[in-house]
Length: 173
Image (cartoon, rainbow, N blue to C red; front, side):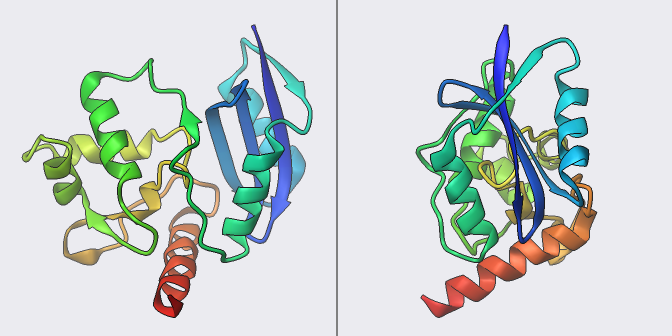
């Protein structure tokens, strides 16, 4: 199977996308260089052929705009979830419903996904998010508003930048 892939630069670092047709399978972000983003994509798809192209330019433009601080909706972007459990799919749907500039705790997200006592399991789903920003795991915080973790290369510094970017834009609305 051949998957489409592209890498592009943003103010938040280099991003990489992989998918088929208009369905996103993976988004990597926050890399310092293009070759690092490509390496991350190839690590995730070591057994697949990645066709390098300007895949999904409309989504690339949305991600570039988001990184530049614009309020962008990714609600209509299709992401691959069939490999996820029913619980994981519910968490992903609940996460996608968290609005721009809004934050929730892992516990609150567990409740929204219908599993009140599953905050740790929600954290695991967020830690294994294949498509950050589109599934906005950066909007999910630990209890008490603590930043929690973030698995992108720049770690919680990038999570803070994303939250600050959204908070600034949301306050201007």
